[in-house]
Length: 298
Image (cartoon, rainbow, N blue to C red; front, side):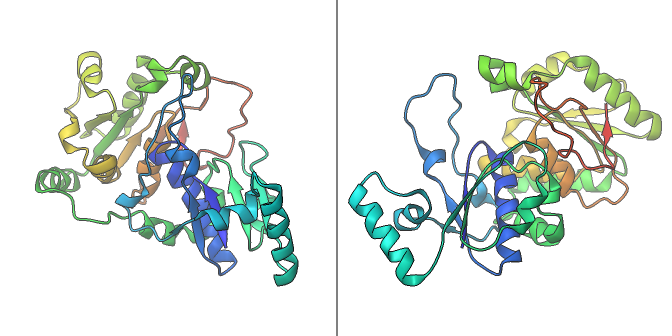
């Protein structure tokens, strides 16, 4: 079995699932998800609580129960730990713990075998590129979108140069620690990115998606057709929002895993993806493997 600890919002959970699912497939074993940290509501300072969001997709997994987790993480009880160790010897089975050692891709990950507990963010397609087709299928919607979303989806599909522009604000603005770690992209980034896109595509239509769409409507003004997609299109756990975003042909994304996945899941082979060259405000992070080589770094 492969068990992965889920942390963060939808985009982060997708990375963790994708890496773990690929490792499970490589070892012909089952995937389990540890939701304990994700669903823990113990008060924390400057912390954004998240929910389990992967249920909006056709993902396949089993929720890890206490018995499974104790094999990897142990127990608070010394006696129970003694029993766990004795049971391991009887069945001659070892259980391993893997903590992501740094933020860029670790090639040693591909050498991990069965019975591993994973903890990390795994934000690189190199963790799952071998099984990209499976991951894309797993991240298809589990239910049809609402009729309202279908109408907009058809409109986006009908346009040759629909551009998804995603703005990430939310706790990147309101949470002091998140702001220090991630930072918020300035307006210049979006205007320069739009100029880059429209230079190549004269008939571009910008579709703006954001966790603060009102701010976007008040602050972003473009000289090309623009549509600000409000949250009535978001759907359960923002699943419809992601579906609409990935339907676009080209992408301008922020330093956001949600935007990253919209661009990566797009089926357009000629897509242009523009992303910030600096993914974190914290310059100590080595993020060289986050963006695929074909994406434009601005």
